[in-house]
Image (cartoon, rainbow, N blue to C red; front, side, top):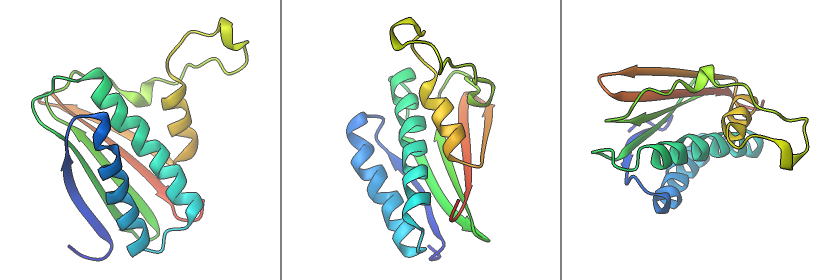
Length: 140
């Protein structure tokens, strides 16, 4: 593995795997001198997408893949959920942030925050495999 990559690692499809996911990300951030603001934003985004994969596809046949790489000052995170139904997170952007909490419809706030915390979110679904790609420039 090159120093700028943390490769794709496969994690158990469980909320308990989050500690290992964070350790994977933290190792990459440390090896690449990623600032705390960038690493915080990416860890929040990784957690949201990973937990959505677990929550909405608990019986998927395989684990969830998380890969990180640095490409010219831009961090690229790939999260892959095999054996999943299509749910394009890039099209989900209607969330009420102005009404009183007791009057809001539940759901969507996590994806909304992901889109605010990273520079770009891409989604691809093929052969029952969902891929979410998050990108963020270091220091932003």
